[in-house]
Length: 422
RNA sequence: GGGGAGGUGGCGGAGUGGACGAACGCGCUCGUCUCGAAAACGAGUAGGGUGUGAAAGCCCUCGAGGGUUCGAAUCCCUCCCUCCCCGCCA
Image (cartoon, rainbow, N blue to C red; front, top):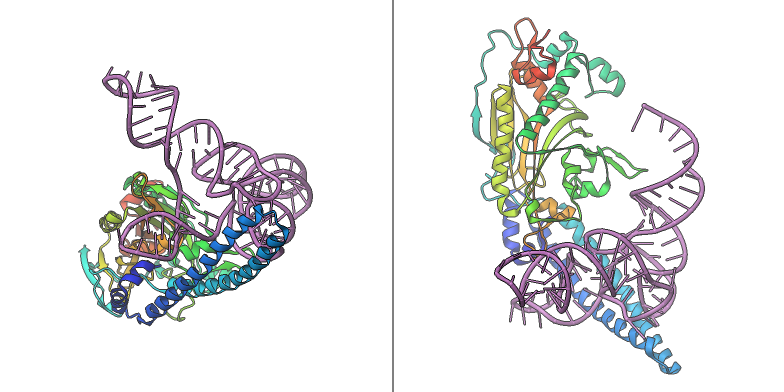
């Protein structure tokens, strides 16, 4: 959610920044007009309440029964008017709040303008897509031949976009998760195991609702939602708390499965394990002082890059343009691993600063100094990394001419010392 | 799932219709005292909204949301959460 004060004080700036992300500015005018209405109504109803409070106090002390009854009758009328106005205030507030919740975050000034991914800028690359010396196979062929990915039985159980990992495939995934968590802990993140099922307010807090409900699984009866990313529970960890400035920054990492309905065009990314309704991810998350959030973003990006580097796979980093960034982000770096089997760069991480966007929604605050008023903190999130796509990159980069897969060195301790899957 | 007890400020804990945004204690901050500290003493110490140059003031909040009433922490309804006992269960 944007800061209503910013909208009040600099509506043209807000509109201009939204314009860079191709969002029309009329909604800002609507919000301002509702804000105006709301404050006018508030002044009316609050002065009536002040009157009622004062008179009610008097009534309590009055001895003269007749005068007392007169006052009570008067206040009954005032009370009815208050009820009426309260209802109006609530209605205007709700309309304003819904509009506020639907507006995306403002892109940072550094972010290049553009409508779609074609305007993203590659800002770093390590390693080159290299020739394996034999025809590279896609991971679905490798996985099936090795008996480690079972697509048919996955579909039998759960339909398309599901698969079963077996044997060393399942173990490789588990090893990868373990390694990622251990690495992030070394990088200074505290490991967290959150619930994978959350209450609805968490989805609002993280910015998944109201816009992306189509992409979420839920248990309507119980009011529960399955997390589409660990970002959701982590964002809400300190909801309604006021942290001491000294507690910041808080760096967390968490492994969770992620559940996404992905009701997107059939035919896109249907093969393999690139895009499923259920996948695993290790996430990095930061709660930081507002002054430090962009420096923290650079550190998070460096941590994600170090992770890719350690796998020994070519990777590159992109700065996303205004049109390709997520709803909550002000600035995002995407990291991509090279996948020679499909000959494409696979997005395995997305690191974003969201500034106070989630903090306002989820009521995340800190006290800048003892005695000072609480302020919203800044939050950042970054994948570290998405597991299936990292698995793809490992399988396709480390494949051998005979269809076996060498295990990256860093993962071998987690694979019982094994160095190849064949 | 059944039965019972509860949810009050940073913490403990009073408060069953008006003097309560809340006694008292602890903690914390500042001050006095001290070479310094402790102790003692004094003062202060919730969040949000509105308002303003800044403030004062006013409004809201005692788990959440409704209701009754001139007036609700207090009475009524719904929901959420915690604890205890029984049942079930990895």
